Length: 238
Image 1 (cartoon, rainbow, N blue to C red):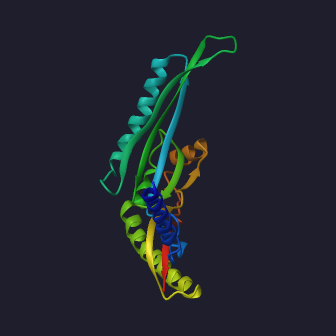
Image 2: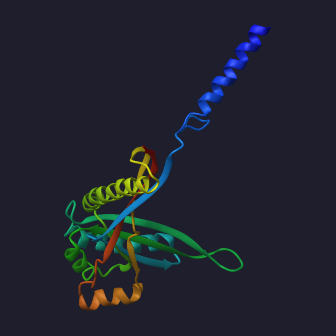
Image 3: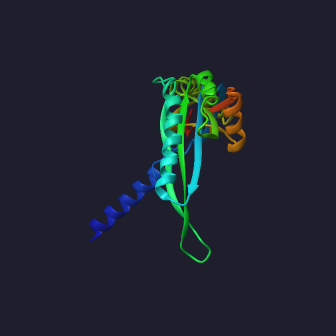
């Protein structure tokens, strides 16, 4: 029993000695840790133009409304396919829906449907010209964004800037706290891009403009902000 008590006392003394070691805490994590954040951002011109065309039809007969929607979509597709080019102008159909209208006292009084066509790409001049040639559908939304290639290129540059700032800040803070250097601990690198600029459009106004003048839609790309944030910990060392 005395032997067992002696072993317990030795174990307790050993634990106290470990806890008392400089630069360590009870969970074996270095005491001289510093939480740190650094970020960098850059503005770049958006290079992808996206236009959503839409039309709404209504009537008493569901089949007639659906057929009218298909005709409008087919006409718009025929024009859009003339300029379609992989990587430059991409064309795809969007929402196509048909739903009943009900009277206040119940019962179906008619049908209403909507069809959409989405056109986007880096050939912004061709897409802007297309908006003046599509008369069967109206412009519902216009938006600019960054292409994947442009975003990746910019992100690579901003990541370098953010990491450089992180390391410089770590060295500066360590020096101010009286340490000679530092070691990088856990680090995460996060990228973000400002939301695409979207512009709503009054459909009747743009439809009338396209049908009468066939003028290209005036557009301006504007800038997007790509940001990179580095979060983590550093261990300051003597």
